[in-house]
Image (cartoon, rainbow, N blue to C red; front, side, top):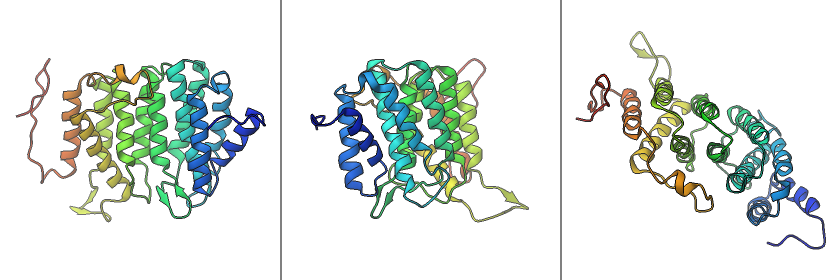
Length: 298
């Protein structure tokens, strides 16, 4: 895993970045990505981190809007690699605010426009755009360059992504990793319930069946609604059980040391949305929050 001594770092890096879109998963998943992340962790790119990130981001635009072709692996692994680059900056404080904010703009633009949501693809291996995008948003959520405004934008991007119509039902842990990105946002304690609860209500509206003269207007639920419903349940479970940080990220021990602020209120707010999906099924367990107080559980 050492940097080759018989060729320049630039030459090796260009080749490895190109291989992130290779159709052979052995080249992409067993060679290019592990080598780049190992060199990143060892500090090989510390003086070049801004340029490396700028060189990775165009891969997220390659073939954007297509669905079902090989271009998806370049977009997805570019996003995953950018998450690692931002993680390195989160550890070492090497990149300017303007660069990270620019990467955030590029990342969120890609994520909401991505049409190919395949997880495992025979012959191609993993694509995992939804999961890799979630990892990228979680890296941005940890960034010292992201304050209340930027974190709110990330929250809205997640809702846009979850609610967008799609033909794909997400599997392979996609909703778990996306919920973990939200938990990372919540652990920053920059977003109060006045921001998060309306966001949850927006997701809840997305899973309520439309009705025409008392009957469903179309087959229900479509894939996007199933994804939203699964996402809300994953978020509820993570709020209830708690999540932990990554061992390789120095700030995570402190970030995840305590539950997020307003956890109890957020748990009940998530449950309100899950219950409203099928109100005939679930027994009411909350009562109205008194003025100046918190909601309580019966």
